[in-house]
Length: 330
Ligand code: PMV
Image 1 (cartoon, rainbow, N blue to C red):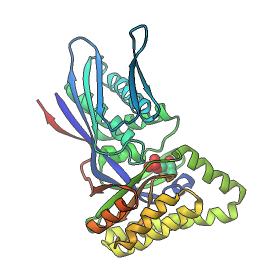
Image 2: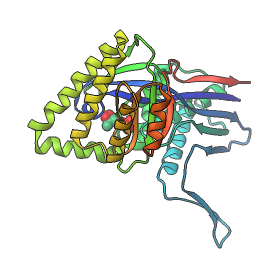
Image 3: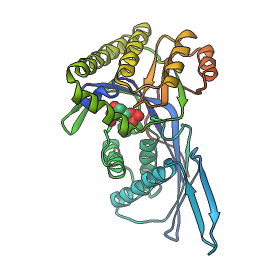
């Protein structure tokens, strides 16, 4: 039996601008997806994702006696397709098809932009490979997990799978079809409170919406995108120096520009302002927007409470420096 965990991530600066070649700064967080793998002798694959915080599943028995699982929440289907593709690629990697029991558990809400699908892909592959007695280089693991995301989604940036594999903080700069990823050494602890509200739009739709604006009025949108890139570079410097105050100011400006691009929502804005009023050094939406997550630079209980009182759910997070690791085996 092997238990692997892989971390989620937040984007500190640079979402959306990164689609236009600007850098982004992503941080792995100490909230994890855990995958337990147990080899079976009968060749069957059994996936138990009971704790994946997947809501909206209903299981019924049809007239013919078949069990039909229904869901009105695409996340269930989608999480399972990541697991399936991850197992297929892990089987190709070890060149063996062995039955397995997989148990998957997430400490993060699924589909909120925290990188759960990438963490599921990374942890599933790593657990399968280790349970069969093999090992894999982390660069190879990140590459294969990125492949899982691309096969399931059609297109995907390597950011989430890189963070789930290596952990830490990365400065990501797209270059053509690739991305340069530089590990960043923070000059101080980065205390983060994550607020979460249900999503009303998908990443794909939001990226497309910004693209339309960019095409219709490039002269207005382009400077916003370039300025976000500038904020990311300055944010990296502030982080390396351990200047949390400056980091907070830059987060606030970054949020204003994301709002200008139209990817925030009234509810996200309310959480962002509630966090600042309660004493956060800075706050912004994180990820694609349209609901989902915001981050507040703070470790104050008042900030957590303010987010909750404004209707958000709270996750308190700090930096994860390990990425994917085996946490138990026997
Ligand atoms: O919600 P997330 O973490 O998948 O963020 C998407 C980030 C975008 O910049 C909006 C899109 C992308 O592919 O980089």
